[in-house]
Image (tube, helix red, strand yellow):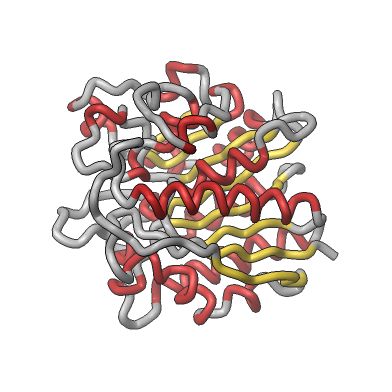
Length: 304
């Protein structure tokens, strides 16, 4: 039986108290451990991080720099420990910058590790033009080595860790934003990319293609779900307070279809789920959506 290691990332990309830093506990309270049944939850623990702060750091120009560095380093250790103890890591909470630690952990594994990302944005904003310094806008660019040359400190030594030929990006709807900053799609680099409209039309087919793509040159692959791939009408707990909603996106059923179809492809090495704000989920509907997604994925993995 597959064993699960749940790893909580109590990190908020804007350095706020609460919000995404409380996501892991809210997802636990909604029953994520039970959602992994019939698989066994072997461990369930949070990373230890310093206090959140909204200031931008001098080494990275990113907000909440001390907690970001600690999360990256500690998450890398936790994911690597899970992999070497024959457990399946499930990272919950925080934002997409968790991928910096995740990919650092799996980088260099025999056969290589691909990355399939479900996200409303491609997250390749250059560091030097980042408007707010949120790490979750730049992590794919850092992983690919498209940006980060001005970075110093511990993070500078952990990237890049990913080749475009091992990356699939599904669900983006940020074309106009990227054009504003003259940032091209990762599709032009050789990655597999399909926008939200395409994924919504053929979720199972595109998921199958994406999983096949990332394993052409990789023995295994990681699945990352940024919940802002969902339409905010269906999942409002992804919103940034004070910012306008970005229209469109997938329904929860379409997202589940992608996750289930992709997971039927062999080699899935781990899962991360990010961008959930329990402060905007008063009735817990968002947390229940997350546990339902995990329950459907667990059913597929239990059959393998």
